[in-house]
Amino acid sequence: MGGIINVISSGAACVLDMFCEYIQAAISKAIYEVINDDEPYYGEVPDLKGVWATGNTMEECHENLRMAIEDWIAFSLRFNLPIPVIEGQAIKAPAEA
Image (cartoon, rainbow, N blue to C red; front, side):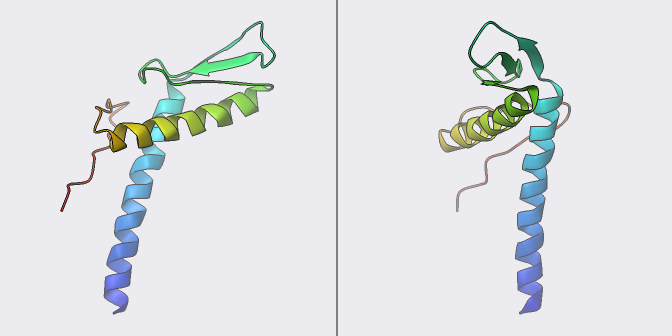
C-alpha cells in the first residue's frame, strides 16, 4: 500500500513542480514600473494577457503578481483556454477520465 501512496505523492509533486516552474518563468518575464497611484508599484507579465498587479511596495507588488498568475492559470484551465509556453515551461490541462 505504501507504493500506491508514493506514486500518488510523486504524481502530485510533479504537477506542483510544473506549476511552480511555470509561475517562476512567468515572474522572470515580469515588467515593473512606478506609477502615480495609491499603490505605486505596478507589474505585468506581457506573455499572459490581462495579468497585472499593484502594491504599496515592490515586494507586495511581486507577491500580488504571483497570485494573479496563479489565478490566471486556474481560470485558463477551468475554461479550457490556451496557456502559452514561457521559457520552455508549459502547463497542460489534465486529460478527462
